[in-house]
Image (cartoon, rainbow over all chains, first blue to last red):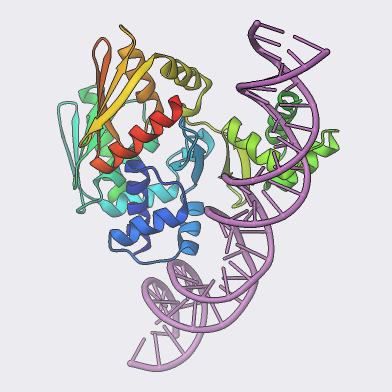
Length: 150
Length: 150
DNA sequence: GGGAATACTGAAAATTTATGCAAAATATTT
DNA sequence: AAATATTTTGCATAAATTTTCAGTATTCCC
């Protein structure tokens, strides 16, 4: 439950501008999770999410961009594992299948890894398309992901 | 005064583990500055400093490592304000009119904001089309842009 | 210099976030 | 399965942060 919730949190904050924990809570409840602000505060701490200032002068929660803290933290790692169902690749494209609704979470986790070989990724509902720099990189990364999963 | 204080803040948080604004205030006063916690809150916001989790499980203030918070994008932000002429939206599409030839600049600035609710944007000569995730996001972001322009 | 606009600040209120503690849920061991 | 340990959570509240409002200082422009 906790992992799913945190995966959802990842998805929410990477697709919406969330200014407060109460707001995040509301979104979570909308998605069918239950919980309280206290739990979210703990999740945020555990996931190393930070509250940053946008260029519009508003605050928003975001995955930490600091090298020190974003080295694909074990937590993101766990979440990633939880929601990925299957991985494969062709040419320089990796396709990741996830549990329904959690593709964005997986995508956010991949972004947070900030791999140099990843050109970018696009998340749908249960599928993430990852564009790699070349075929080699795709093979390698796909292997690493599979490795991670078992 | 403000600049000096903020410079000192930078120095302090990069040499000590500061967990709260009160603590930072104490350090500042030690260094001969005067002020209140409210002022520090404003400084922190302005400087885009974030509160992150250390590996020890404690919190600490740190300079943001996120790309969209760099001074470069702050500059883009300024440019953005200067080249936008008019903003409006319909459904989930925002249309931004700019001074002739400056649409790409505005588009780049929007990209640099990396707003979660922005799916993508396309710039012509004096017009930018911004595709938002949904109607609500369009209304909100459009309002925020107008707000920014004053 | 004088007046208007702008930026800065403190005090207090309002909001937001973190946490101690006990209970509930989950996992582990026997 | 029962007993025990561990993790997770809610509640209440403490702690921390943001913001409003009002006042002061500063800058700008004539």
